[in-house]
Image (cartoon, rainbow, N blue to C red; front, side, top):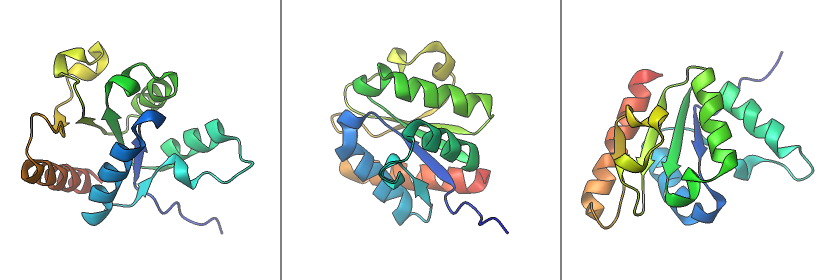
Length: 139
């Protein structure tokens, strides 16, 4: 018997944004979601295959939107794969990115605002709670 994939949420991000990844991942986990990130790829594995496999097996796709992720070929590929699989996609807006900066295919998706210069710490916590609740309802 094949073991069931234990992760429900795939978290996409640019490697330049690891601190943000940790904050968002921790917030999702604190709110009861199981989160897959590329930290789980074992040494010696074919990383791109592992990422594609994880996107296929998870039920929801969360992408951290920053200036770095908007230009990352890997993040663009992950977004396209999640869309092709019809996974619910959730956008966490960070840094100096504005909703108008999003590519056309993402502009119609409501964002979770996690920008520190625009949103207080309390409101960022509440935003992650709302996002987690929305994901749980969709699963």
